[in-house]
Length: 210
Image: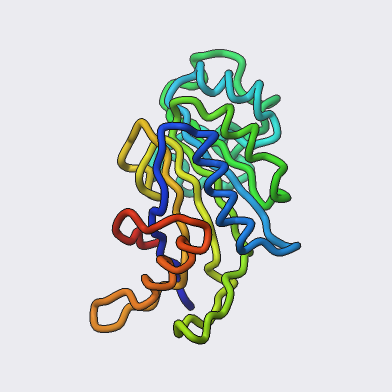
């Protein structure tokens, strides 16, 4: 079993520019089977309603307490907590009490199918676009063995970290590589630097572990 590690390589307050930049890395590693997913958190009912009108294809899931439904069969839990499409969102605002923030996500879509719409819709909310099943090339002269399992790119909206625990007014592109720690040092960090350089970028911050 292995994990990835991600490095920030670009940051801007312009979401369209952030997407354009992330796509440069994606195209460098893209294969016919590569996919894209997206995730967001909405802190208000108004934001949920707005995005539901713009991105109806995703699934919305209301928040719940850690042990709120402990022992309750999955099929007996409230649909809004399990996950509903836009058409299944509660009509009454009172149904959102105790259910914020609301998560939205869509998985394993064809590259190019959701990115522009999501970038236009995200607004002030925290979210991400994540491309996976890419392939980073082997570079024997640099000692890089290539990778497909952890060849990924993430575009973070309104946060600086993949944990979404640092709200920000700008957007960050991450490049992912396989984590390989020896003697307390991340041995694949040079690979991240090399990958960024191939599309005119550079690592601009510390590693973000999975």
